[in-house]
Image 1 (cartoon, rainbow, N blue to C red):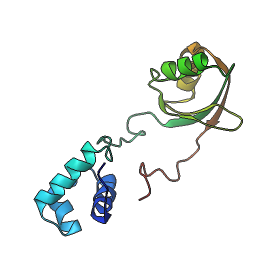
Image 2 (image 1 turned 60 degrees about the vertical axis):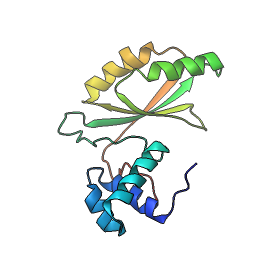
Image 3 (image 1 turned 90 degrees about the vertical axis):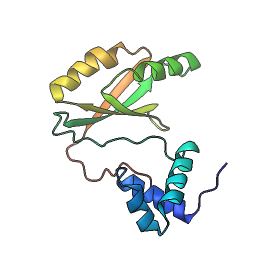
Image 4 (image 1 turned 120 degrees about the vertical axis):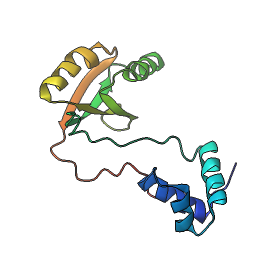
Length: 153
């Protein structure tokens, strides 16, 4: 496996801030020429340090402005129920993130919807059709303070 160095970390920091940055600009910022920078970025992708390149969209402009964190507890803790829950949750487009957590709940979902009416419909119809859920507790986001979509490097 490829060992990353400080230049690779600099490249990752820059790309994480702006994935549209050109190879030329990257090269200038890390004091290398274009070819080695291009090769390093290609290697970082191949080795899995860069999983994918994506655009961060403005939820308000797209009328998806309600963010809800939903804590899920399963009815039973069996392999079958857990696996089925994970499989089912992958098909719910409103669920943008899902984490298996410790503590009082089993899973934490980040749900993004248009408004409270949409969330009600989501809970009753979509989430309600997922087998194995014992309880769901919702926390509504009143304001987003920090969301940098990145990993601290």
